[in-house]
Amino acid sequence: MAEITLQDIIKPENLVYKKTDLMTDKPLSYCPGCGHGTAHRITMEVIEELNLAEDTIGVAPVGCSVLAYEFMNVDMTQAAHGRAPAVATGIKRVWPNKVVFTYQGDGDLAAIGTSETIHACNRGENIVIIFINNGIYGMTGGQMAPTTLPGMKSSTSPYGRDVAMMGNPLKMTELVAQLPGTYFVTRQAVHTPAAVRKAKKAIKKAFENQRDCKPGLSFIEIVSNCNSGWKMTPTDANKWMEENMFPFYPMGDIKVDGQLVK
Amino acid sequence: MGELKLMKGNEALAEAAIRAGADAYFGYPITPQSEVIEYLMAEKPHERTGMVVLQAESEIAAINMVYGAAGAGKKVMTSSSSPGISLKQEGISYIAGAELPCLYVNVVRGGPGLGTIQPSQADYFQSTKGGGHGDYRQIVLAPASVQEMSDFVKEGFDLAFKYRIPVLILSDGVIGQMMEKVELFDPIPRWTDEEAIANSPWATTGKKNGTERRIITSLDLDSHKMEEHNIKLQEKYKEITKNEVRYELIDCDDAEYIFVAYGSSARIAQKAVQLARAKGIKAGLFRLITLFPFPTVKMREMCGKGIKGFLAVEMSAGQMVEDVMLAVRGCAKVEHFGRYGGIVHTPEEVLAALEQKIIGG
Image (cartoon, rainbow over all chains, first blue to last red; front, side, top):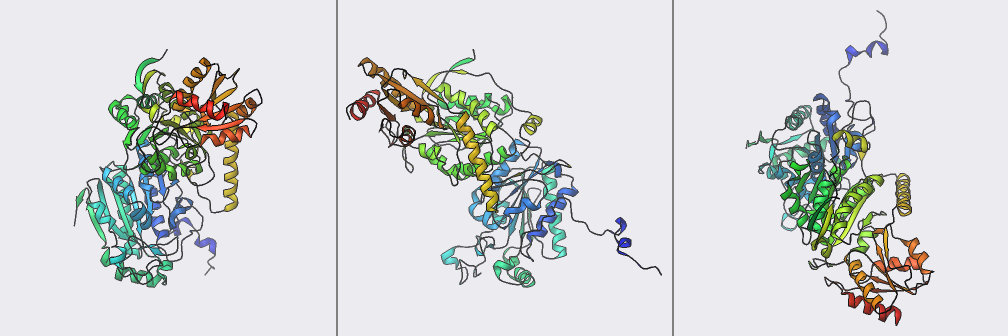
């Protein structure tokens, strides 16, 4: 039996997975175990699969994913903190035939950008918002976010979030689902292969909605982890997320084709 | 000759935006400039030229819509008045940092804080020294008539795209609200999508296969690269200072005393020149049209030629006067006069200030 060499293995017919060309080769700046990389990848895979890359303009936020434009290989604009939905509105209104999306974290979208988010949703801007909720400000070092759970520790709630003093976590996704301008609102995760497949399907639906000029905004929350900020190992963080984040932020579609489903 | 109309300054500016081929206006109502968006909404520019007009949820959202659309290569603008312009400063700093072309308008009212809705020129520092964070400048055009409210829209867009810089039309409550005859320029067609892409190859319009993607950002975490970017910005500002200074000299040839003023104060000072001349005082007016770049060289040249003093006339407690002093550098007397907090000075008060502070002082 002839010896099998590397050249025998590296053949097109043996290819089982290939990084999409819509992700650059730049190493991701995210912590090992973080969900951002997966969320970036499936977003870009969807744009590639729908053949939308040449007409897509993305908007990066301020936060851990501020450098999303370094990794997403499409035209990108970096927005001021929280302003991505307004920036995307400006782009979409002057280029109505282009595909426009924002990629934002929970500090960006649900605190400083609450107004821009609600009003872009309420106007029914025909854009996609991808909202990564890890319950913490990751980039600035683990401070309390609007989404931090009651009792959850962060560097600005070192004894746990005291809701009597610090207020309650904000469920932005349930909130925007109530607005007539949203067409598709869903909550997903990317911590297991099954969750990734579901999340990708949801992102695909959102971009199809925009491509097909469905009336309204598509809003996808991805509940994610922050093992560095939560001070856990990646596997512990995912377990903690399932046990604590998911009961508060339940998975699944909230609004489909403009109709509330629950 | 273009179409003649009797219009408010704010209306003339709005009409000029449609005629200049603007692609979008994003705004938020605030006195004394709400006529801009009201006129645009009533005119249905979407039907006339395809121009987008959108009332945003805040001044912050409006300037960020401008940032997005300007970064996508379109001709876009916003307008507001002083408190609203303060809210826009974050966006303007990003626009300056990312080197995007856009036009914005401040119809200034009295401050600080909510201040008053009456006219003022107290936003000079904010306009000319960089109102937001970071080392940046913007071109500032100061209209003194309804005619210039119209003309500067066209000129402002041209300058914005020539230098990839925000251009500010710094008006005030008098110029915005008063009615005058205006000759409207002939409409310029909006750029087609192909023209917009060709005119701004750097803009985010969708990455075509085999081309490099375009990124609009003001961020670079590498300080050396950020310094290089800042040096490039400063070189651009020097180029603008060399090429784009605009001013008007009225009765300055034989003048011994010069009023320096812009906007509605220049109109008042022009009357004060007439009153002075009637009394045998050789006064002239140096009307600033660009506040940045400031006509430093010309002013410095003049002060060696028999000028005994400059009176900076502005509706503020004394802001532009600092740039006059920097230009003159002690070679002639410089004083300030102005009413503020929403009060507009009279020509008689201006002349009296010249007599007391410069001639008699």
